[in-house]
Amino acid sequence: MSARTFKARQANAINAFPASTLPDAELGLSYLAVRSALFISQPARLDLAQSLLVHPTLHRCLLITSLLSILLSLNNWATVRWRNGTWSVKRLTRKEWAQQIVVVTGGSRGMGKSIVDCMITKGAKVVSLDVLPAQDEAGIGHPTVLINNAGIQNNRLLIDLDDQEIDRMLNINLKSHFYTIQAFLPDMIRRGKGHVVLTSSVMGYVGVSQMSDYVATKHALVGLLESLRYELDKKHRVPKVRTSLVILGHVRTALFSGAQFGPLASFLAPTVEAEQVAQEITAAVERQESTHIALPFYANLVPWLKVVPTFLRDLAQWMGDADDSMPPPTPNARARARARSKGE
Image (cartoon, rainbow, N blue to C red; front, side):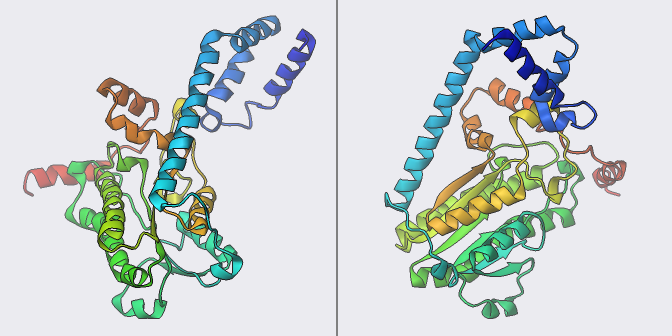
């Protein structure tokens, strides 16, 4: 490539990111790099870009990233094949989709609403639940798919949580999963097929400030689904009742609308759209296989933080703004905590 052609393409790239229209948090490091380039002379920019393209460290980083991605993909593929006991994939046909009864908890808004829409598009009958009164169970019929998606968050320091907030968190984020599984799983076991999907989080593997109650429930869901998988395989002997765990980073929904991430965190841990998550869950149900869905890509790496040295774990937490992304506690919450500590 000639220097003139390279400079022309470089100018087009810079003009494509005007400072007045694109926020730093959305574009992350790529945007900052382009903004910085505006203050460097044109020849210097060309020399810098050319040196970066041929820098051996950059090549090594790209090679390591590519190998890591390939290894993770192979690991996920082999794990799914082993878990399902088959090398082939039998997808639901349009006729079979029409026979599916899908129950989605928390399906009235956000990601749950996106899941409901995707399932309806496939032709399934969908029942959206936010509360499950006992008298309504019989009216639902015999669900073939259960997607437990309901969840809330309090954004409180542990000492600021009151009894009502803790109970509500446990009821919605954890107990409701037990109750819906107990309500609908026996029929799946009797028929020898079905699918249970639980939506958890990267916080099912790591702890985060101001989220102790939320983190505890997400850790519990990871253990719940793993135990359920072994019960279905070893005790009930129904391997075709599938189970899928969804591990998510930051999803663009109202639940975490107050979270703020810096440019570095936005670049390393990009926000996922609810529609993308819904499509992945729908695809897993269509393939009729137990699987592990992790979005975005970095969510595949989070479980490994349990085995890396502590300083690397803390570095990853800092780079992702994990402890500083949520709004600080309100004065009223702090006052309530002080009053409780004094026994008032």
